[in-house]
Image (cartoon, rainbow, N blue to C red; front, side):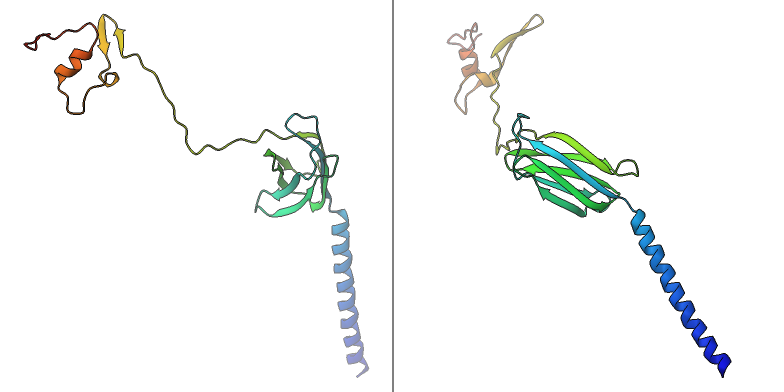
Length: 179
């Protein structure tokens, strides 16, 4: 009976030791894990005025998960930190300018990143429609041939070739229709 009791106590002690060992390993591995930090200053399109309230976002490349974000302060500065080493895109955006994206590859020797000056590009404009008017000479020489562009001369909708020929400069049509 004493032997069975000792065996049970031994099992419980082994369980406690195992749990303590796992706890120490977990805490030890998390203590050695490095966290990334990205900081910088955002400027307007001229590169002279710091932008307040620009949004800086860190988005993991592998699964597009938002790691962290922050708005810039009055001096245009931001600092995003507290996420594990990873490859991510840093996206800086502001309503008055276009977005700027950096791709950052985290590594043991590349975990604290400072971007001293982020100059946002000017905001592009989207047009509903673009109409291009091109002028093409109605008459031109191609080698030794004089070329007339028929679309350049106004004639009625149901006009015949004779009506077009009468409008071409340098071409005459008599009463009989001879050129």
